[in-house]
Image 1 (tube, rainbow, N blue to C red):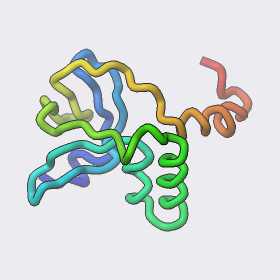
Image 2 (cartoon, one colour):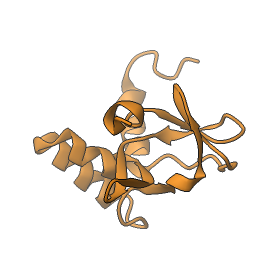
Image 3 (cartoon, one colour):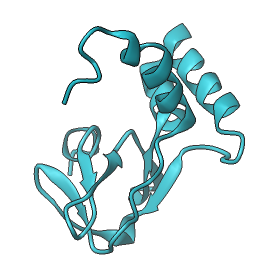
Amino acid sequence: MLLAFDLLDRQIVDRDGTPVGKVDDLELDGPRVTALLTGQQALGPRLGGWLGRWVTTSAARLDIDRRGPRRIPYDLVERIDSAVHLSVRVELLDPAPLERWLDEHAIGRIPGADDD
């Protein structure tokens, strides 16, 4: 399996088809995938450079209750196709604090951003 092609940036959905997030990084134990990592604290190191450091530190500062990225154990993965399907129902996660801040201060100010 080519991990970067087969897993990274895929949408994660629970057993009911509810979107949970995207695979931003992987947790490995040798050659074995142990968890899917999601959120800005997982994405930042993949971006690299000053942008990656800014994303990671901003997310860490805004999400003081969480140490590191959200972690989904790999044994909860049922199948992988155009999305990563979990075998359990996951309650819709609250948006990460950085996502809320960006929505309020950047994306929300774009004309037409609040239209459905």
